Length: 92
Image (cartoon, rainbow, N blue to C red; front, side):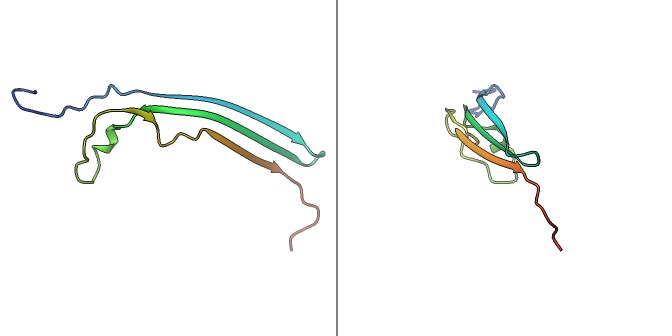
């Protein structure tokens, strides 16, 4: 109760955690071409009731009990490959 009234009070004492492991390697194909390969293992967890859910131009959000869970931005396994390649000839 706040000043004798029932109220839902928001505070800023939430938490979140991000752990990440990144491995990147480069392979030189020849003197002009290089291929890069990357792997990232990550885990993101935290409070599901984010403060920005309540401050917006939308109708008031339904306020749920606070839970810790995997966050929407969690991408546990990412593979990425890119390279720098020189093309012989011209584009006319």
